[in-house]
Length: 191
Ligand code: IMP
Ligand code: MG
Image (cartoon, rainbow, N blue to C red; front, side, top):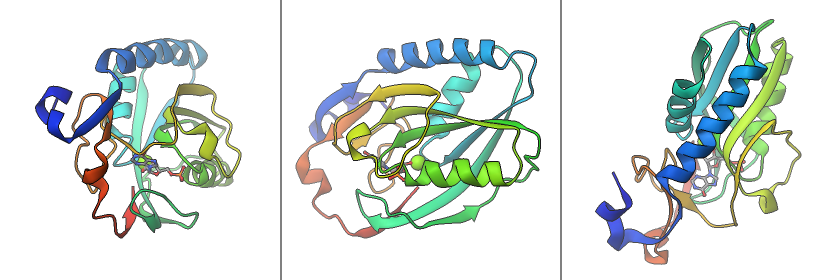
């Protein structure tokens, strides 16, 4: 789905498909150099990071294992809380593995902080992070991001895997919806 298909729902486009692809291509080249000769495991959190993992992994020029985990953090419809629960765990042993966590977005940083700590405590040899988007001004905990993406303002965004109420994940760019689209905001959970 392209921005033109849902123009009436969109306030503005924040990042175009080309901007996203450029950044992903450059990041993939760097990752391919950094992990050359190492056994790379790329780990994405469902569902938001799926598009980013698919795009990034296809640009990487070394063989990589792709793994997924489903986490949930409960909070209001457009914010996440700190309490993380595992809905679906990894199905492999990460001891001694070089893990690259691929994230869609960092908001408070709590999801990522939890995941980095969890992978280290399971015995990973290394844990690094690529996050496509980063709301730097909203961080509540510190996270080290080796491969930074785009720093974005404190606005709720959709597209390229990111949803509002499970919709808009299939948009091929990143956009901000019109304020009226967010009106029915409830207590909910995020992934
Ligand atoms: P954190 O734990 O506060 O960093 O929350 C990160 C998670 O919240 C992301 O993986 C998303 O699922 C969700 N999230 C945060 N900001 C947005 C947004 O602007 N749009 C869609 N989802 C978001
Ligand atoms: Mg996510």
